[in-house]
Image (cartoon, rainbow, N blue to C red; front, side):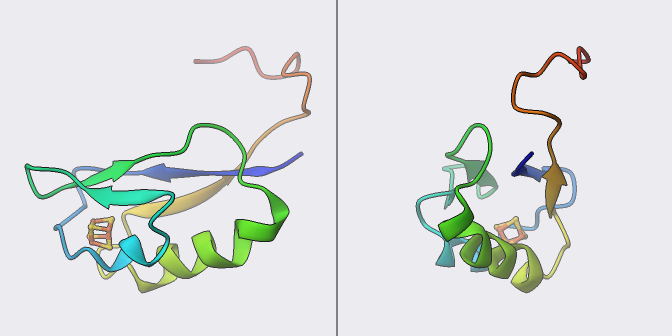
Length: 77
Ligand code: SF4
């Protein structure tokens, strides 16, 4: 089980603070956050991604727990 970042573009105000985790978040041309990473965050990067979520003034970033690694328990989406 791991965690993956999800972003809510409706909440994002383009403050750019999340780019502290530049391997995961960049600002796109339209001034909204762009998620660069798909899937679970490696343990070693979790503090960095958590920091990005915490500093986001719009609370647009969430770290979502993912299911078992085989994915069989979660067929949604
Ligand atoms: S810090 Fe939050 S509001 Fe700012 S660009 Fe990142 S997701 Fe958007």
